[in-house]
Image 1 (tube, rainbow, N blue to C red):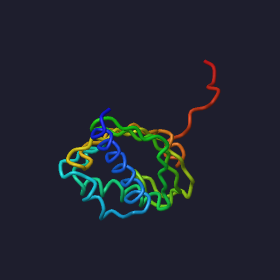
Image 2: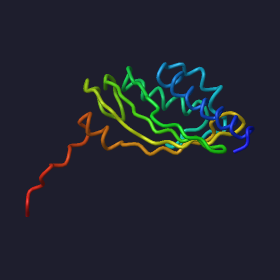
Image 3: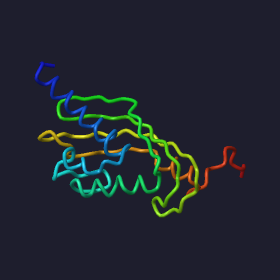
Length: 148
């Protein structure tokens, strides 16, 4: 990788770090205009900084003490891959389910594409089933299912 490309990849990775540190963990949603491209499309179909603001607000409403820890951050060309672990306490409504007070953990991998120094696309694979089980929205399967 040439020096110019390496610098761009490092800037792209820093952009993703800022998203998690400033906006998601610390709730500085006004920073999203600096980080999210107007043409942004998220994994849930959200569009632009406004759409992403709503997604973060939904997470922070359900889990006011939410903390995302980036465990791996990999960059190449215009892509950055983040593997993260989220922890928080379910103290507000989330995904249509009332607060349970339960402490939860979720893991995910997300791929971001960067354009013009801002995030323009996100593809997310997360353990939604595990999170919904932790808040009691979905019953866990029995460890030893009954024999027929």
